[in-house]
Length: 158
Image 1: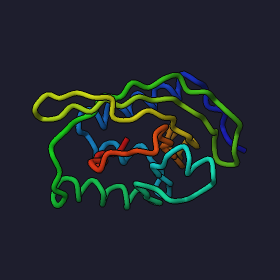
Image 2 (image 1 turned 180 degrees about the horizontal axis):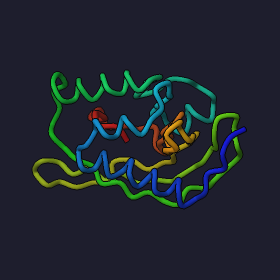
Image 3 (image 1 turned 90 degrees about the vertical axis):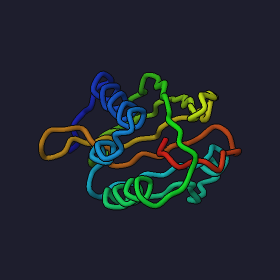
């Protein structure tokens, strides 16, 4: 039987998630996921059609750690940072492991030269679980972007 997760707890997890990305603490960001997890970034059209194609795909924390390592050491992209504005999570139904939720977001991208723009809007579709240390983690996070047009600079996780 899964544990019921309240809105305030899910909101806190989402705030921590956004803070890790916005403050370039990506190593801490990966720790918000279970060992065996799903992290996908897709768009609303593909999601509505049930298409599994993703701009970013990882099915384990190890894959997320590899992505962060690549960002730190191998990938070449114009330096940028994000600022997340995250809405209130809507707590949906319970699953065998945890609870599903849906949370709206806006991500603003700030380039090294100071140019600032709305980069992405959408919703997070999550399965949140309580781990064996009584901490909330994402067992699954599907990032569904509203637009089918995505900048080729999608380097940093949303």
